[in-house]
Length: 286
Image (cartoon, rainbow, N blue to C red; front, side, top):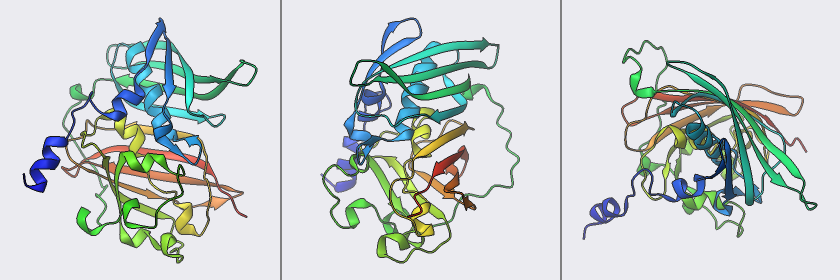
């Protein structure tokens, strides 16, 4: 069978991928959900913030009368670890076109006491009901085609367990933002990449919550190294993405006092801006 046909045969649909299985929750009671956070979405030993946001996003989609996240803001309080967790949701307001809820993800310390990891506030609606009227000055990022970009598999072998999430992603970075990997960061604070899930699952609003936080930190291109933990992340979902790989562009304009912002745009295969985000992250300066 030709390679392209084999790849097509191996594609999975929305609802039938590792991402869907690993963000699935069990409803314990109205508004209360249990989940076992997968080690497959970790960087070093911490669970990726975008994956965690998708978990909370799925819980709110079940708890609220509307299914699609329009805006979701998360404060990351303590680092999440693989293993059991509970998500508690609360319906704040429901309306005809928008509903608002909040949710917290909690885990347990060595004494069995609950520790809050993340708290979010979000508004949900129906993306399919939005008018198809786009007036924008935003332009999709321009960088080489997918086969001329580079992923983790093109570099040195990673340390075992250091970045399990990359094994689940199709991530191909723009060569002009890869100076950090060659020991020559550009200093520009930019990161761009093609993004998808490794198993071929097409994007949807929940996977957009992962996409905005899945690229290497822009801090690497500024010349810093090490973990860049998220303090706060807000995502705006603007449209249901079309099938096919996404393009993600992230920029940082200001690092001060040990903190930096990352502004992300996510564009789909039809050149439509489908998500935007801003996060505040802590940078290691020494």
